[in-house]
Each structure stands twice: as C-alpha cells, then as structure tokens.
Length: 288
Image (cartoon, rainbow, N blue to C red):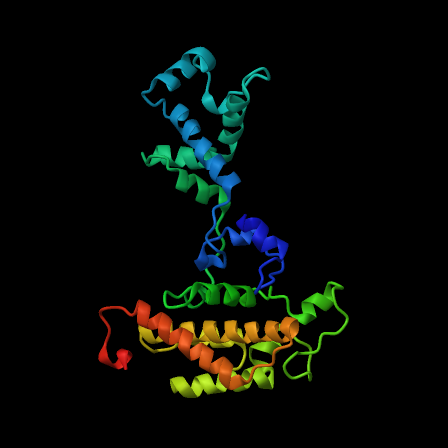
C-alpha cells in the first residue's frame, strides 16, 4: 500500500512523482524512508537455513538434510535436483548470494542474523547531510514528508508537470514572474521569500541563504545547541509545508493566502508541536 501511495501520485497534498523504490527502502539517514524491501528481507530470512546447513547446526532438520541429500558432499558445491521441492530449490538458490557473508561469519565464529543478511544484500547508500534535519524529532511527520519530497525534487511543481507533458504553462502561482520549480518556490519567489524573512526575524536567525538545500546545510553545520537545531529544522519543515499547501489551495480551490497567514500557521503548528514534545532536560536559554 505504501509503495502504491508513493508511486501513484495520489497523495492529496503532496502529489509526489516517482522515487526509486530502492531509494525509498534506504534508511532515513541515507535519503530513504526506512521501509524494508520485503523481497530482500525474505531472501535474507531464507539465508538462516543456508547458514544452519553450512554450520551443521544440531537440529533434526539439518541432520536429516545432511543424511538424505548431501551425503558428505560439500554444501557450497551442492546443486539441488530439478525434481526437488520449490522451497528447497530456493534455499539452494539463495546460498550463492550469501556465501561470502556466511563464510566470514564462520571465520569470526559469529551467528547469522536476518538483519545482517538484509544489509549485506541490500547494499545501503551513503548517509546524506540532511537526514537529521528532515526527520528531526520536533518535526511534524507530515511536514517532514513534504520536506523529504522537496529535497528529492519530487513535488509536482509546474516545471516537472510541463516537462512530462501534463500542462502547457508553468508560471509560478504566487508571483507569475518565473517558472515554478522547487528551487524557485523555496525561497526565490518574492512571495515565499517574504514568508521566509518573517520567520527569520521571528527566530532572530541571521542568514542570507535563500535556497532550501543551503538552508538545511546551514542548520546542519550551525554552532547552535542541538535543541536549537531541532527547532530550526521544525520551523523550516513547517514553513515549507504551509507554502506548498497554500500553493495547492490557490491552484485547486482558487484561494489566495497572504504571507502573514502562512507565517501565523507556521508559528502555531511549530509551537504546538514543540510544547508537546519538549524535552524534560533543557537549558533555560533554549527554553526561552
């Protein structure tokens, strides 16, 4: 269901374009959503049987297999007969994918765990710099999701829709002076820039950066306390969400919204979220 949701473009607010399922199944630190690839997980689970046979574990099933099938033959050179049951042929098929891992575990006298097999097969991507900011614990989840799509440039902005032949005109709905793209919308458009500058003033946040990725990078590198970074991330995620929502309301409902209202909605949602999730141990400066 989640896979269909992400690929079908039916998210009522996000309308996301397709993101490679392999990327979605990466950890949040590596640009994904932390979903498990069920096919790879099943293969890793079957690896438990491969490992049990290779290690000659003391159980009835392994003893029966060695007595009736292997008969002193080397497990790694064994090939399942064509007339074998399908599950046995699958076990035999999986062993080639996990041989290096299982042999390494044998040398170090370690047990096989399905999670180890999954990581070995899945080949995780490198960590991205924006993982903590996009998925900060003070962020509202739906805000984080829209921010994640924006970082991947997969929001259905007009430039992408025009490129795919869905629409003919790609003018920005807010200013009408440039093509609507993620880079323009966050925060080069004078409408969204107005919202952004009001937020900076509210937080007493001094920065001249006006592109989303550079803002996220600034938060990641800032010398502020961990709590302050979490607040900055939550505010940027909320602001981006409310700008995108206002854009969609303008497009589909014909509603026009002033920057002051977007900023107000952002402040309210962030204050409510942080008040609900405020850590017990926090310095007075951070609390203020």
